[in-house]
Image 1 (cartoon, helix red, strand yellow):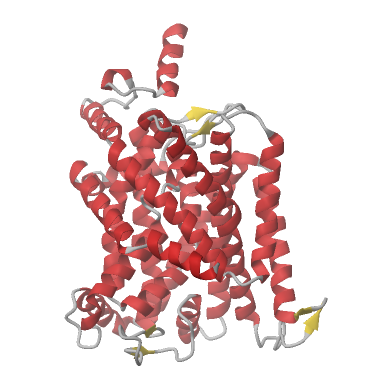
Image 2: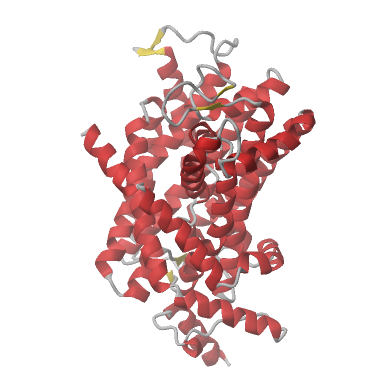
Length: 504
């Protein structure tokens, strides 16, 4: 079974998917006329503005909800892994993927807004399953995406994130008066596993408080916590860089020379730098995977392109700031290893015996702030992973709502909530390797289905972008009329126009 899972995983996450993501990002960048560059000021303006309603959340809350899913353990452990197996040059290719991915995010999130609906409780719902059915008209395709999303984000990946929280907390307190050596038994379990079980229970209880409050509570929590956790982490990275200021110029030189194969030690890793940089860039910012559109559809906006702009900015923030913060922490301190392409002796051994992952970041902060590094990164890992689990729940609930025809079925929602809580506790103290592999299959399948869909269906997003820009040039606050643009099945927006006409 393990070999079958690994085989399927290697097929789904093959170089073909990496090429598809890069090609889609480049294509959408050209089709939108580099909107992520010329529209940057508009992105920032729309991010801090917006309004909310009984049916939808504000643009900023939708951004925070999507960022909760994007900013996870991949932003720490994933970046470290990219450097370990792709060399420092992988950081540059993560930046490239982030830049191109901004346009991909614009397209998928604008589509989510165009084809959003109201569920039985009057809340906005949307995402790839909705626009695949409404714009493509292929129900089985939409159902396959929805099922893949529920399995991956509802039952597999939450346990992986909880395991990362438990591991980081245990590693931070090992050898201290809080944990000691953890080599005994407690409640019939090894002390380390018992501690991780306790951490999983605490995380599950905290998560229950949030998800049983519904979408609005998720949005309110994300609005406060996500900016706080991201900015705190970035400030710590800047502090570490300031304390290693003399190494910063060399660090940039290392990144660029490694990225183009001209570095003496890492020159032979050009292909791996591209592969790992793009792969981890995709995994961290999730552009094209179909995760961000779920939160984007929940926003209350007057025009779909507004949320498209906001979600394009989310990619910048995730890759250019949070992932870069991790890379700078690690590279500026030299606390990393780089595996040789042939599997031989490491090309760089800054942390002998330490596996690629969050341990690199912990060691980096510890090297300049002794006694603080492991604990600080453990706290960051907790917030990053916890908010990701929260976002996973929202994605799985949205797809459950889609499958159920957006009817009010509280029993199904309750079972989903209980299932996620059980997986959080279970995943916290069990080995997460197979959960990772199974989750990767689910997320990879989501990415394949969504990227193919948006490459076919991107025309309505392009029409929305041109319409938004046209109205902005006229000095208007853009509003959306799908019928005037020839966009069909945008039932929510057409209904809003008819309702307005009746009221007048």
